[in-house]
Length: 243
Ligand code: SF4
Image (cartoon, rainbow, N blue to C red; front, top):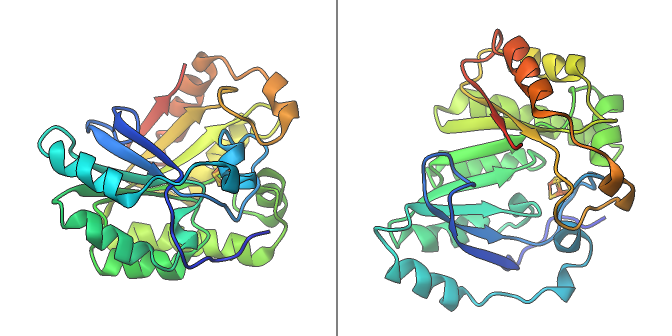
């Protein structure tokens, strides 16, 4: 399992995305490596064999952002797990010089770095994945790592975000065989009062980390809408994504 690394590189660059930040056009940057091994992960190569992927020169990204200011609202930094990199704050500072809004996607595994980034007001929006109900057995099963510290880190990150005043969302990819209605309700109870909770339907597109999950049929979207009605009692806003 890979640990915190110091040198951030970019292994994927989507120039224009309407899907990565509700209501905004963003450029999306993918960092390699992850501390989790979610079997349903759609970025297997980025997580398992990132060395096979081309590194995107930062000049290419900077040039595009400079030339498309006004059209592109901001940058979404995703992965992999971006917070594995100690130089993430420095990297964000460079992008901010281009007057770009910044959204950070994280799995919540690195609360110390996350706190630093939030306190220094380097990001405008944080999306934190909550993978399962917040007990060790459930979490380990879904993230593929059995370590109580991991769960504590995720809980600390959740609390940090909710107390920070930053704009944010929590989100869960809802996967048949891993999640039932009651699991999502348990998560919603844990984040009671949260500003926004997104339920994302599992998809088999992309390179799935555990090939067995390629054969799992996603829930019918109506099931997610039913769960949405249940969890809306606990959070300020609940949205459903996917088809
Ligand atoms: S789904 Fe996210 S947290 Fe899980 S292995 Fe993939 S990149 Fe890591």
